Length: 216
Image 1 (spheres, one colour):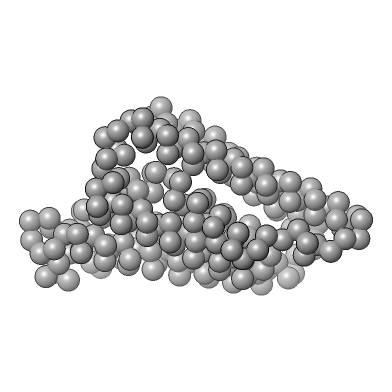
Image 2: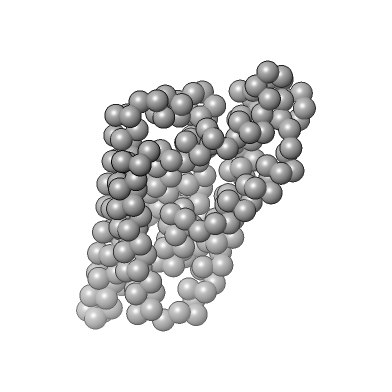
């Protein structure tokens, strides 16, 4: 790795693991998809999140994140879009919980309420991609482990982004499978309550993201 200018790789991987294990919007999203539709939806969401995360890493490597950090209006625009999307996702989860209760009462098939795997993937992608703070995180975190005056800093940046993403996606895949196993032991009414709580938490995350615009 020294040929690329990367140093303290072990510390980078350890820190990445700790950061990825910290619960956040991505983990909550994968839990909600697995709880609702099973591990396949959780896995689709995890790969969507991973692609979004890789997009942020590439953007940071190319300097797009630095441009966002320097341009207040561009950052606020993306922040507003991210908050709006999280709010929409939270409302969808609340509506899904309510319709699930109505479907159970009316005897309709719950499967009719499930999104497609493609929708789970795209929603995971947008959940991550529309959060500009992820890009700013890469811009602040990764350069600490790259010597920009030695090796190939762009290649080093991309490689570290891939390693960070590998750690994150591996964790989310484990979350998807574990949630699916627990899901089979939880009654449908409890799952609907958890879905409603997840929707409320996404609305809270949206509010926090919108409120933080003034602090950045």
